[in-house]
Length: 284
Image (cartoon, rainbow, N blue to C red):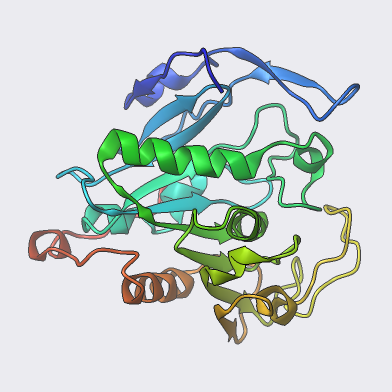
């Protein structure tokens, strides 16, 4: 993604219009033409960054990000980066000074919004969008801009976002130190990427992405493996099945993810000053 200037701003009102025209294509006849996807409902203190024809949202502690781990937050199908970032509870980690958080934005022109995780989902797959490449670029850009530690990068993904997290972990060995996959599935083979530490959280009442797997759901071009099959080739993986939980990203999930990331040094220690600050209220 070269040749386009970077856009950096914290004023949501200035982000109401697109910044450039681009083509997202997977070959003849599959081209989508649209403007760069731009958020107009950013949570407080969050800024939008453009990377060529793509974008991500960035949140860093008031003291800056030097040496902090990077957490990449990937929302589910039909959702948006701004809404999920504000509602997920992950911004509390920024307020506590324990991580720099980046939330990539899906490619423009997709209806519904989706990530290319292999065989899911929707237009992102049909147009062969390079979302795994975007995650790699975001991690490198966050480290360059904030001084955060790219060697301690993790993905926290929900549903289709968890599926993309698996793809990044498996196809780009060495990029991630950790993955928290919530209500997702691994849709690509996993070779050397099996060294990534993984926490897979899945509700036993999930009907959208069943913990036992599914055959050809309407939003994917193939079957969804079970949670057990998803973690099987990963040498450092933990599967937690949440009793009575459906297809949701709950506060319990956030707490489990926080504890696991901290135990793997993928969140920094909370400073006493930051710990005393009240948590954010979800924006939605």
